Image (cartoon, rainbow, N blue to C red; front, side, top):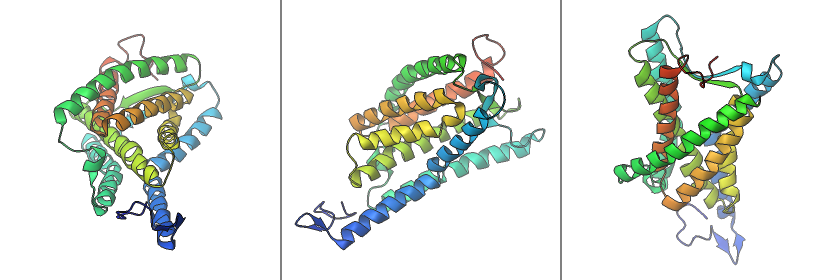
Length: 272
């Protein structure tokens, strides 16, 4: 469908797409590819390269570590803090780009349900989803690692300074906003307008989500693909990414902060 075309026929005449309709589709496709190339699509390629490196390194995967939030300036806490905030802020630039693109078509982020119209409902739904997905995901990770299909995930390795927990929470929120806005709200909207089938578009979103977690191992790939399917189904049902952002932020916050508080103190939590 052509952007802004009230007829919804994409400039077609007697079912044959016009030159302008084909051009609009090409521009929409190119826009989508560019957004992904600047964000999580590039992360997927990076994760694949990282995983190939891990596979070709001596020793089993479970003896290798996938480190998430790490120090950017060891021994220099104030500089480290600046780097952490800078990294979080720049990671959200693709979200700002998506907001700009959706606003240009007269929609904005509100059309994908990323707004403050229903904060209590979004948070309540998100907490419920997080409780189910978070517990299941932890079990899948522990099982995959024990089976040798996953690296040991180290959610954080920041210095023990005053800003450690706040930065971990901000990193969790950044991950949630970036992934759910781009991989669910934006991508599904674009694939729908490009004519992808009701099955193909969710599958693409789920595969993309899994692929940029491949640096964790096969368990990270499969577990996040399953999570992607669930999140897409919930988005289709609710029409809002708000609850998904809340759920994802809660899951990552528990993972980051929980690791910071429990690593080395409980026997069931693997450490590197």
